[in-house]
Length: 139
Image 1 (cartoon, helix red, strand yellow):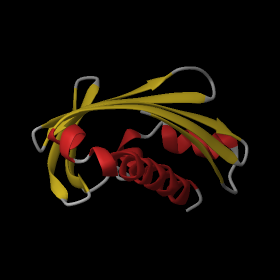
Image 2: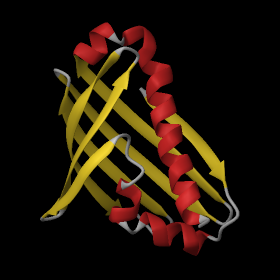
Image 3: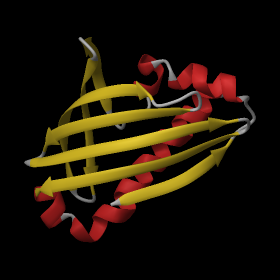
């Protein structure tokens, strides 16, 4: 599933990039985060989330990459609730705006049981992530 959007904010490109280049700050916006630790070039994340009535703990390996001067990539591979979720997201920082796109692949129980609820739930999680980033930039 592909998701795209943009968030307007009263901040410069440099202010946005300062936050996007700080994985500790970005990770605090992950849903239901319980722990976030660095291991080599990756981060290990544990949290709680869900889709509809299916809720539980997840574990993910997350990498942050610089694509170019304005774009950053977040790659997450997670497991939990007898499911696998792969997220490949790109955030582009512009003056007063963040454009984002995310490709999300889900397999397992969440894909089968939560199929009817999946699209809107994932879109909400992604929107919440980028709205949280917006709030952290403008603080």
